[in-house]
Image (cartoon, rainbow, N blue to C red; front, side, top):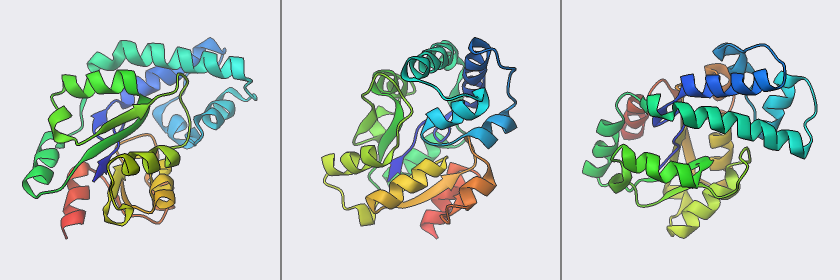
Length: 210
């Protein structure tokens, strides 16, 4: 099993919205509500910001967006908690002989100490984050590499995430996926992918076990 981090195992929606609104303020736009951000959310992330800022972003502006976002997000990271049922879900997988790894499009240098800080590192055979200095790319290539590093058969893997990009990445890599409604996208957007959608990771595991 491959877990996503932000919005799936980590309940960070309030920090995400604050960081998005830091970008809005930096570009002279009014704050967004969570529903407005969910409606705008897309991959690659650059498209989301071009939509809410109503402009095409050049590379210098995109770097500024990324900097504004992550500085604010990092400042609020200490206020984020694990999603409900995470520890129990991870232990359940261990007890049932499932291997687990973690793949995130958040910066690797920030991801690994955060996972360690929550005491979760021993649950995962591998933890991979984004190696690039600017975020926002697609997850598909990262997932393919993540599976190859572990010599995993994609057909035997399930990815659990919270956005359409997780389902798209799974499809590209040849894995199954389950999406949870705990993150940045609406249920209707998730359901449009055609993969199973649940309201929690506990329900996602229950679906796997059925």
